[in-house]
Length: 251
Image 1 (tube, rainbow, N blue to C red):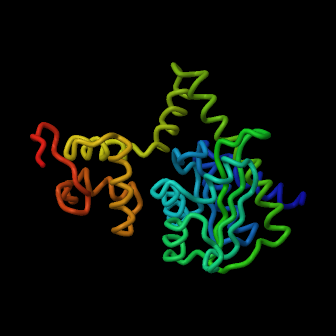
Image 2: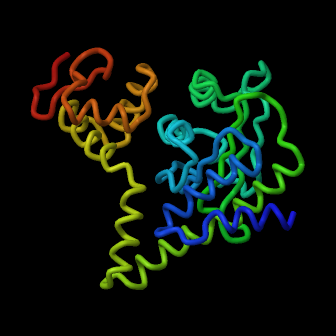
């Protein structure tokens, strides 16, 4: 176990930012633990606020699916404060997170392992480990994953702390910039356009954006960019019924 911890700790040494440290830790999970991908999510148990780190673009996309569909092992791990194991997403008995499951299987991933990230019993995120093949993690890989989840808390807390405690300093400004980069600003902007176009509530607008993403095999962020770039017609049947703001009601 000592060699695993040392390798994971060393992977983050000298990182110029908290986000880079998180990315390096995820890549080390792939190299050291023998998994096919890893990502670190910031989450509150209801939704994910953003991807804090990832081993690559596929892992980042898989994490995006949890926000897009509002379900997934990361959210369950944060809510319950315990690891959530899905060793065979292709199994007919695996009925958790149906939308997330279908999207992840389509992407070629068969197993996901979500490990809470936080302090004691207060998780504020999760480390997700992905495998293309089904099957449980080895004892060594699971032990290393738990160590990585423990280590993932430090750079995130550092980033949040520097942003709050040194708001007027250059370091504090960098912390806020990094936190802002986790937010899916394009999603909020796009839902605003949906609200204005269809005269619906913010919650309904987000539901419609997520439904559009699911129907087109996109993440919520990708669907949002289509809206912002005027590539999605908000008044076709794909967005559901709803009058435009200011339109007269009709029977």
